[in-house]
Image 1 (cartoon, helix red, strand yellow):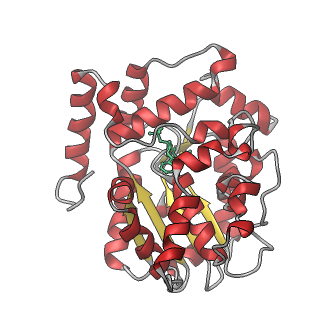
Image 2 (cartoon, rainbow, N blue to C red):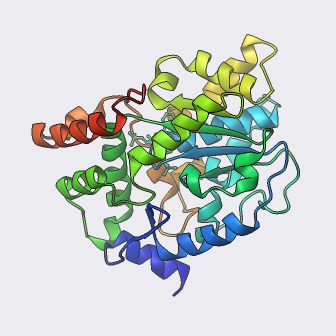
Length: 302
Ligand code: PAP
């Protein structure tokens, strides 16, 4: 089946997700991941960004692309030229790209910066066992993640006139059967690994980035071995990567980097607590229940 056709089917809900190694994805993503897992060899300076869906991926990609580039001048702004998803390719989505990413994972020069939505357990051993290959993971409040995902897929389904009711999305989030789900196992694996290897895995929360972006972005730069030498550079990164700015850039307002997924669909409100505008008390209870059950004893609060 054509990849295009498959993602179209996934969007139109006619495609069943498959489970492999305990996580859910479309058949072609799983096929690609099997090859990636067997063949990928990490380099010592690789940087892997990781996230479940809709937890701050685009923002993190933009921030890390700027920091890794290291040139903060306006005329050198990569983000004006292309979407953060173009500059930092998502490994398992490469097949779905309508435009070849800036860097080819297998040939790009070191240090390589790339991203995955995959759970920790299916990452290639060479990534997991290398002390020098760093991972930055970002997660988000489960209720806001659910709302963001619901908006994202319905926005991209507009042309199909096939909207998914929120109850259905809440249900699939709570039972873990959604793209790259289950969410909580995804988060907890990276959380546990980050506690064991804090020098290798940096664990971030979207809400912390919103609340104190200066502190969090400085932390990211330090972790990447590229601390800011002055406040101005940090401010430039914050400004370049702000939601308002990225949302209004021509490259993000139009077109599709991924087939059938509009670039504009990655930029919405970016508000903490937006779930309050959407979830009924029953839905809220349903997500809270699974959250407390899954995170119990982990020391993690979301
Ligand atoms: P992905 O995992 O599919 O790549 P991701 O970028 O994680 O998506 O999620 C998009 C969310 O991040 C949107 O949140 P919302 O639906 O609650 O509004 C989007 O608005 C938000 N977002 C995107 N870019 C930024 C940014 N620069 N700053 C803050 N939030 C952002």
